Length: 230
Image 1 (spheres, one colour):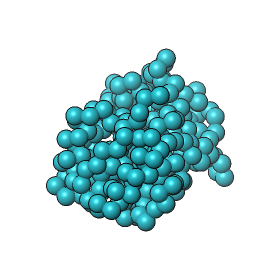
Image 2 (image 1 turned 90 degrees about the vertical axis):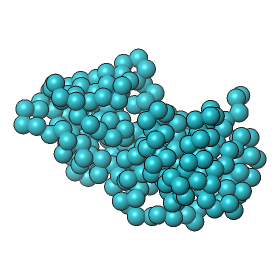
Image 3 (image 1 turned 30 degrees about the vertical axis):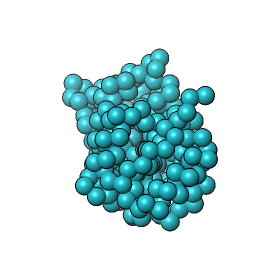
């Protein structure tokens, strides 16, 4: 089995030392960066399989690191930070993070999340290899190019918004709970707040709802959501 390479980015040397010790013991090869600029330098020179990323970093902050990485790569990113507001978590997901963990944290839990992210792929991403383009009425989602069209207009969506829309489109008229959507779209049993799904659905509706649509993302009260097509 090929050795997986993890990049730990945090300006706290004690945290970096602790994570390196635990991840080394699990058989990972660990690279460490204490600022965002160094993290990007290592990422660009090394075949990194997963990034553990703090937000409050010197030189270049974690938001910018995440956004820069996402321009060229889908490598899993776990944000590890003291910022615990829901708005911070949602911003992390908007920038392309796959998971968000708040300090102080349990090291064993973080290692478990690392293993889960390396082991599993979201269903939408996993199944897109054979048929990355799906449509319903005037809506077209091309997951291979991460592009969404409404009629002839390209609509700018965040990566997780596209993945969520693709999954719902892939399973038209099927109802999924918030917990199921977190598992299927975010890639594994997510430890976070299910309001994340509500916010992403709200944003999809704001960007995509038109009177001429022959489909809609419907709330099934007490259960969850579905994309209802013709």
